[in-house]
Every structure is written in structure tokens, then in C-alpha cells.
Length: 579
Image 1 (cartoon, rainbow, N blue to C red):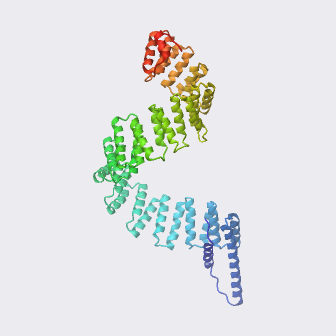
Image 2: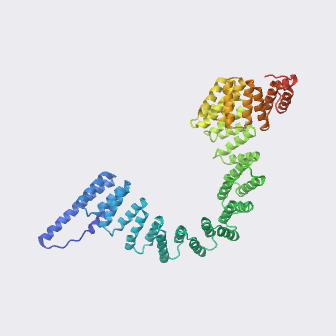
Image 3: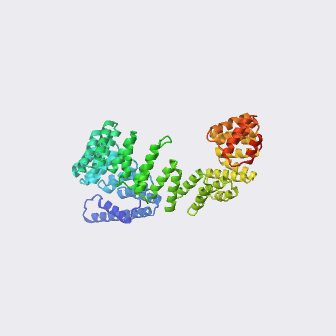
């Protein structure tokens, strides 16, 4: 809000030129009076300049005091009032700024700068009606200034004086002729006055001036929609479909229109047209497709899956070098369970573009799901050539080594990850749980328990950590009561989990509670495809319940799924249970 010295001198010259003319006196008395007046004016100018120098230095407090002293001695000094207004405005003391600005105008009614500044102050205070009323004085000084008339009309609109605003815009239109901006403002005002047909008539003026432009049709449709005139709204879209079916903007609007009405066939027709439209840029196509994917649910059928994949494939074929298009296609393949195709697409991306970590992360995740842990390790290490600070690469590598039963190798990336300062509490909890797994496999049980305890301290209700910790304790037959509590809590958090049911049942087995153990392990087997360990557990339980035939049945089923297991084979051969 600083004002330069030139502007200060300009204010003073205006003030000095506006002083009330004094009657001319003759003789010595007149000369003496004239000399006194000049001395007074010069003294006043010096005081004003001293005060303004303080303001220019940013010393608003002392500057304000100095200007107040100027006004005490020279109350007619409107420039001092204006300077005080600027100081108080800079200090956000808007009431005082307004007060001094009004006083300056009162002393100098024809100063347009003062009026414009007061309008600014009033607008900051959202006093739009008061600000609008001042434009009458400005327009009296500049009657042909249409810009002032436009600002006055906008202020009337902001103050919700819609009739007054409409009148002003109509005056501008009479003076300037056809004006697109004025027409659009009138449309908004008419809608606020609930004059829907008149608002449509304004847009039709634009249709006449600019024929064959779909934007005006879309604006009219929106007016009818907002007014609840659905028949008129749908009729406009029928016209759009007939006249503008190849226009990019119309195709987008039509796709959204039919999507809202759940007309799948029409929606797909226009989405297909959008993807094939050479006048639509790839970025817009990708944005529309990504937005459409939000509506996909797990219940969508194969046809829906195929439709979206085809759309993404269309963009990729049109833009073969566009990594964003390839990335969306890869993401869709991933979402729809086409893991191997997704892996191939992500591999292409990381060859062409090393600027984003996400494709590497997706590769690690997909290979983990495919149980191809050597590939997980390869891509985790490869990604760190470009993203050495990305924490998930360390986690994936450590988890892969754990799955391969190579716990000593797992410790290196996991502890390297732990040293990073940016590990947030949630990720740190998962990291500690993985370290607990590694130390358990190495039979370093004290370290394993310590890691699990630390993980649960961070997130005591993490179901996976509770389950794993409980299961390892059950394998060691250690702290079985604590293991049972943790396992039961994990089932409360994730009821029906096959793994968690098995863990709880196995703990009950270790506690000798065989009927209860059978109940939970049987539920686990019934919950989905059972692995060899789960089937063997159920066989063990049945043996303890003296149901040897049932035990043999499940041991044999386990043997069919597992690698050769001498202990399991001995159980079947001798029809006896061994640890």
C-alpha cells in the first residue's frame, strides 16, 4: 500500500488548488494577509511531508499521530484524511479507513481518486450496496465511462439488487450494442429472479450471433435442469444428439447425460465415439475414462470389464508412445484380474519411463500375488537404482525372502528400511511384524517377541500382527493364554478369516481343548480352498477326538497338496499322531 513521493505531491497540489478563494484586499492589509496565508500553507505542507515520510518508511503508528496533528491545526486538509485512510487500510482497520475516506470526500467532493478508494474500502467490508451507490457520483464526473457503469451493475448484482443490476446492464447494452459478456451477466441475473424463459432468450441471442455452437445448447439444457423442467432439458439433449453428435464437447455431455439415466447402451455408444474422435486430446480421454472407472463395482459383468479395457486399448493404440495411456491400460488389466497382461504392460512402462515408482510397486505386488518371489526381489532391487528412498521396495524384498524361507536374507532389507527416518507409524508397525516373522524363522524367539510387542504397541488392533504373533507362540507352545487372547481379538476384527480361524483352532488344540479346536478348524476348512497345513491340522484334531478314519481322510488330502512330508507320511502309515 505504499504511495510514492510524486503521488504525495500530487495530492498536496490538488489540495492547495482547491482552497477557498479569498476576497482580494487592497493596500498593506491585503499584502500582510497574503503573506500570512502563504506562510501558513508552507508550514502546512512541511508538516504534511514530514508525516508522509514516516508513512513511506512504514512507521504507521507515528505517521498516523503526525497526520492527526496536521488535522488538528489544519482541519480542512482533505489530503491528510486520505493519507490516514490509506494507513488504516494497510493496518486492516477498515472502519477508521472508511471514516477518514468519507471525511476526505466531504472536504473535496469532486475528487474521483477519493471516491474510487472509498469504494475499494467498502468492497473489502462487503458493503456492496454502499459501494454501488457511490458510482452515481463517479458517473456524474465521467458520464460516458461504460466501464464504471459495468462495475456499478456488478456491485448491484453482488448486493442482490437484481432489478437494479438488470437495469444497468440493459443500459450498457443500449450504449454498446451486442455484448456477449453483458448477455451472460443478464442471464445470471434473470435466473436469480426466477425468469427462466427470459434467461433462455438471452442465450438464444448468442445462438443467433454464433450459430452451430453446441455450448449455447448445453447452457440452455443446464438452465432447464436447474429449474426442474426435465422435459425441456431432455428435448434439448435430443436436439444436441441430432445436430452435434460428432462434436467433442457434445459427446462428453451426451455420455454424462445417458450415464445419469443409466442408459448403458447409449452411454457406451458416446464413450466409444469419444475415444475414436481424432479431435479429442488424449489427456481429456484418459480423464473421462478414469472418472468412469469410479462407478465400476465388483458385481460388474465380463461385458463391462471388456468394454472399459477396449476403451483404454483404443487410446493406447492411438497414442502408442503415451505412458499415461499405457499406465491406465495396465491399471485396468490389474483391476480386472488380468495379472499376466498387467505385468507385461508395467514392464513396458519401466523400460520407457523411469520417473515414477508406481509401476515398479505394481510389479512387485503382482509378482507377490503370483508367488513369484524371485521376481519380487529382482524388481525391488532394480527400482532402488532409480528410487533409493522408496521404502516399499525394501519391504517387498524382505517379505519375498520370508516367503522363500530365507530369513537371514530378509533381515538386511528390513533393517535397512528401519533406518530410514521417514517411516510412518503404520508402516513401521508392519515392518516390525515382518522382522518378528524373520526372527521367528531363525528361532531367535526373544527378538521375534520383542518385534511383535513393539508392532502392537504402535497399532494394538492390527489383526494380521495379532494373528501371526499368536500363531508363532502356539507353534512354540509358549504363552498360550496370551496367544488365545490375541487370536480371538484378530477374529473379532476380521470374522470369518480362514487363516485366523485356523490359528485360533490350533491354539485351542495346543491347550487340549479338542472339541473347540475342531469347531474352529472345520470352519476354516469350509471357508475356502484349504491348504496342506490346514488340512493336516484338521486331521490332527480328529485323531485327538478318537476319530481315526476322519483323521486319515484329512491327512491324505493334505499329502496330496503338500511336498513330501516324512512326519505326515508316518502318521498315515502308523495311524498315529506325531508332532
